[in-house]
Image 1 (cartoon, rainbow, N blue to C red):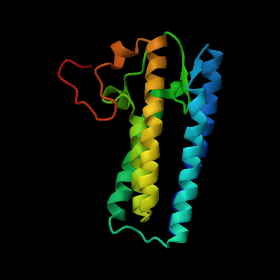
Image 2 (image 1 turned 60 degrees about the horizontal axis):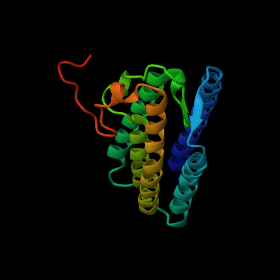
Image 3 (image 1 turned 180 degrees about the vertical axis):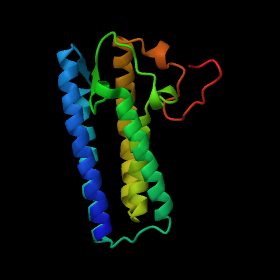
Image 4 (image 1 turned 90 degrees about the vertical axis):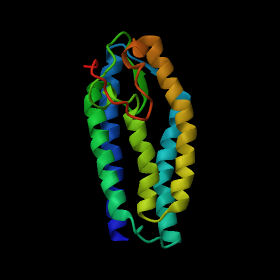
Length: 190
């Protein structure tokens, strides 16, 4: 139980640090004239991510779930997702946020993982919501939050892409990238 609590505490601390970064970026972007979108669904995203930890802890304790036999492989996959998360956040720099905040007429970021995929951070979150519970044998949490995440992203991604199309040259910058599955660069891409 101690390794589980340490792991989950680390994830929660990471999320809180990300919120600090997001708030700092939000303040800067809004000071530059950025607009916010998706206010109605954002609260449900926050609720879902908060409940993820509660339900995971509840399932782990209530059903005395054991580590998965595949936990080493899942831990490596988790570590890889964290590298992609950091790569995505640092690639966006001051433009990264947990909210949909768009600065009009800026050049859309097309570096880092955004060269290959439109939404690397959403891919990372999707993988995490599946593999973290699986690592600890919390199969109900894995299934439930994978489904909830799919529902949330079916609202979130279109709202984000609409905002980006409205205020930036999104289609001409990232139109050829896939949403979740990396597209290998061809010899003509920079």
